Length: 394
Ligand code: MTE
Image (tube, rainbow, N blue to C red; front, side, top):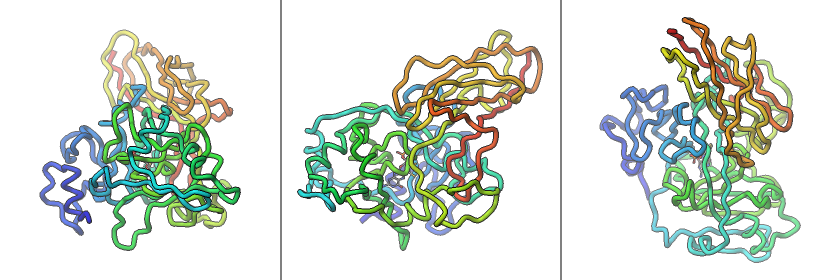
């Protein structure tokens, strides 16, 4: 059994001698940057620490300038303690419930199946929560609760086929090996059988070509491409086919979106909400950095990434005058169905000024990033046009 002390040891926090169970230091709730106040976490250099009790690390925006996010800079979202590093030869994945032949698989069994790769933008549904007004409780993610990686592993559909899905099977439930503290409900969620049977839904064993790291779900995680990150259960140990959607904290009231638009700050009846599935359309500016002073005399490269869940990005526009006028950005050559698309725009500043730069994406479903993202009590799916300020010293 892993204790909290062991967890902190595993996370290799440097300079964290003052941590005690109840009195968490101020930085445990976030707001820190790379200026030196935050602890270093082994293998995760330079991340913004949003929480250490349960590890939540945000990617600095500049890393949205790369097609594949290095694992070192990939955000981490944990609802509870990471499992102790077990013996991987003892790890098992069970598949049961509405199936004819329940299965118990070892890591070797999964490795021996045909492997498939999907490049996918994983985004936490709460990414951007900090920008909602009025404020909502929860991890105050800003722009970096997102990353793009190539995930590899057997297709979930192949396993369900082997187990013999019964016609009564409607939803597929995932349970991870997280260590559940006290009376916190376990992280269990389900997805509809149609999405589970999609050839791109994986039991991922690798991320960017290397075996999954401990923070990202070693030895196996679900990869539900295009959907909110919460769908992709880490440290997977149990798959259960159900005749109805799983009922539990992380399906209801957690991770639900109001059926109707909500006035900012208003309460919403949980019965008038639905579980979130696919991500919405969104872009972010990787460079220049917010608040940067630009001294260049020549053109300035404004660039970043845009993604749209199960849809494709068709256009990204950039404004350098706070929305007064818009210019088309050039889309990057690399693209894959569920992956973000890099974009760039060459800007010639007119002279010394304070400029507000915006980016706005449009997707193949005709969705356009709004000027103001709809408010909701969970602070989910924030997708307003991205916005930075720069100071030009021409
Ligand atoms: N799986 C388990 N078992 N426990 C968790 O806390 N967090 C989920 C999901 N899978 C979580 C989980 C959430 S909310 C997100 S956004 C993604 O994992 C984040 O994946 P990452 O930490 O690999 O970036």
